[in-house]
Image 1 (tube, rainbow, N blue to C red):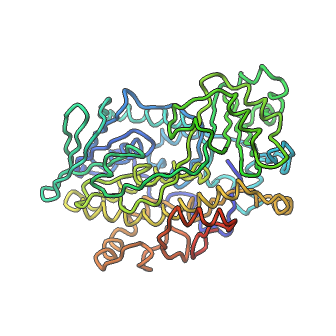
Image 2: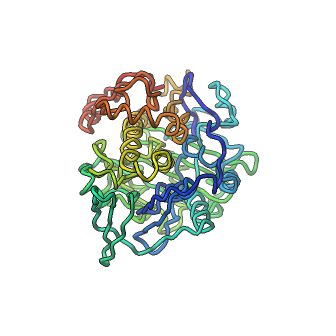
Image 3: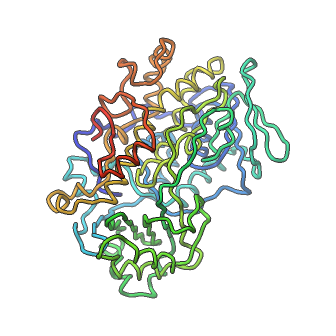
Length: 501
């Protein structure tokens, strides 16, 4: 995992909730239909079952997609696993242990030598046994969740592409219609079907995507592919023979990240658009395009030859060119009658640099399952609205933080980094990873409902509710246009009031 820039975090190492395994909650009688089997959908299914809801799942594809490379999983997204001992055990097995981190300029000049992640955490006054999160392999995490879903006997119907969502607020029902004409009705529908979800039509939260001018080349493949180039194999070697190592490469207008695991090699590079990028995880290109793009980096200093050699070890049909699209915060996440609610990318998309997309998606899932259990079948709409009220400001802040981190990675001040290595680290503050969405719901449900009844629009409007956002922050509407203006004028991204560190 990356070094994390945190000062005096308000950090809760473990969930304050008592462990309650499957069967601890009585059946609520709430019929929940979940659309989509991404991280948000899978977690929602798992937690809704534990909370006593009746669960069905629809998936547009013929199976659950377990492909991909890596992402950052924050601690706030994994606290719920304490209720699932077998899930906790499996997660520990697939997690990185004894990991190292090393930082370079894009030219290949080493700026921060290899150090144990634990040592960097200690230097920042943090407990190495409870890091803010860790890099995870998407295929391994997804397979873990899929296996768990299968053990629970969850009813997943495949090849069900949802084209329309409707609700009958008077009778307390929601319905979705698939492309083959079938209709599915439930007490509440959780739309976890990603960016472009058809639930936007009834939720009213559709926001137009605009190009950022940037994209990400991403590749993950067996470590044995490095055998073809001994120099690359030596440079990107494991530490101490078998310990994983994260290497960051920071340059003008670009950055890259590599992860060497005992079984896999992963590399990711941020770059200007080339014309072949798409917002799709199946959009592969040849490595020649990457090599050409690396020569176009601004300034006289080009990419390190060793990184080019690494790119050449990538097997065919492996490099994904993923377009980075910018979207304004989505204004609404639930339908007028609050019988349809969006979670994950359906409600909010994140830049990869934020390190927060997977984390916030899972937090959403844990939160909505909890709010529904607390309110019960008679207060579903109230519970859905309370969930959205709780999540909106926090997620909006996390999205904005992602833009600030992207700016830092692309415009590293190396003179400051020499004096303080933490200056090269993205912010991942205590208000993010110290949060426990389940505990927050149970501790504050009544306060949240009361605040809404008094007319509060945002959680920051009521000081009696503890903050799950930067301490001292007051919600400010913001737009991509403001972010772009800051970046174009070489100003730091304006985060707003409060302590974002």
